Length: 480
RNA sequence: GCCCUCAUCGUCUAGAGGCCCAGGACGUCAGCCUUUCAAGCUGAAGAUCAGGGGUUCGAAUCCCCUUGAGGGCACCA
Image (cartoon, rainbow, N blue to C red; front, side, top):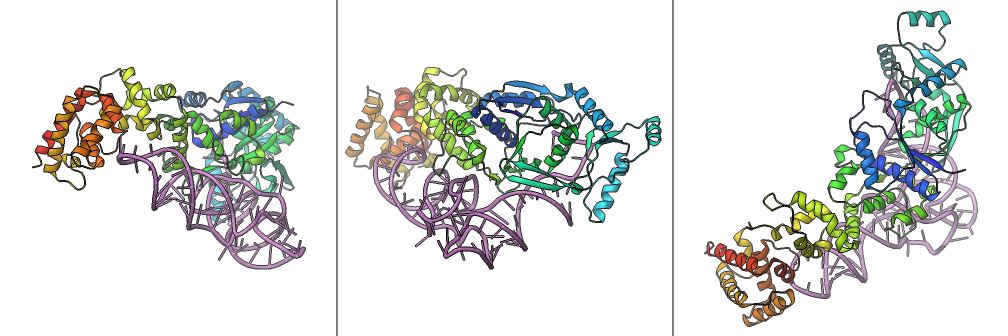
């Protein structure tokens, strides 16, 4: 039997990292077993629907290169399926219409809470007579359909990750299958679709464990064979609670905007709850598919460690060929370089610069700020930055004056020549190379931390460099 | 309150009775390299394996209890 799994998001917001990780494990499982990965939209809550959510979700899946084989199926377009199933359950005596108002339900629940009882439907409508039902209908009350959960016995299932899990039926309560607006609840729709779509394995987040017995009960009432279940550990925030907005960025597209690479995200997210062995951290997509197995999924929730993600992204960034690196960086440069910089950017110029920052950025989004001085006409920095350790303003001024004179005379403006020439100059001046270089670095870039100085100067070109050194000289004069 | 689940360095994890006075990775610290910053390399610190009882010749690994944490208990998914 071929493996068929599904990813079933509801269009109620932006693609959460947790959802994406669930999708990822389903996808890896499907690809590993040469099975099918199905996309299904659980849009059965009309009130919570967010416009554009599904498009964003699909964008994210495409960005991550997680292709699906079927779908998207929309549950909102399959309503009759659920309604028929609900009717079948009523006819079989496994479910019943319930006419209780939300107000009554709320009152019952409050009372139960007050008495420290588990909140559970009191089955008020479970044994209504036919005439009572007719009367309710006559009053125009739209009922919900509830599952008649057995009062005794227990429901057990084998979780592929956690082993056997058992619930007492009397703790479950008669859940709603069909809402009064004719839409199914998650529980019904989920069971009906998983069955109709021949889903073999349900891999979903941990938070669904306690609703699994309800689903099993529905399968049993319908005389359907349930799929296999595996509940994945959740992704946690630093305080170990379910990862949420208050912990920072939780939407996958935010990571895309922050300059993370899809392959790095995939690698990192997989390692949140799965491991290959005791030493492998970096795995290519095909290796992930090859090795993925539920046996190696851990049971514990995993804290999302953004610092480690940054490290891994840096690794992937450095592994990129320079052409690819530049291609990836370009949109970020266009987006984030100061507005004063002329667009479109000169590709040949960018091509020269990128090799200088490839090993210095952990995300694509930090590249623009690393290289903005290559593009700006006027540098802005504090004159005091020019005065290095062990020197004063006057000394800095005199060094820069000499350097300016000498640099003006140079004809060969490549990094090799600049380096040997300036090393010689520092010797002649009886100066530490460090002192001269850092002074020039600040003058030429306005920064104290930059890519290698001579390559930077070579790319900037003689005229620009001389102009900046002159500007530095002028700045220094204001200090004296 | 009730139900379910989980529990190894700060974090992600390896470990399915002896190979473990617990291994790897991120982070941290130190050193090397070095024109700065990175990157790279080397090394260090860091977990009485939540606590307590068993079982066993032997337990991080099996059992029980306690504690802690998380999740669930909607006409939301």
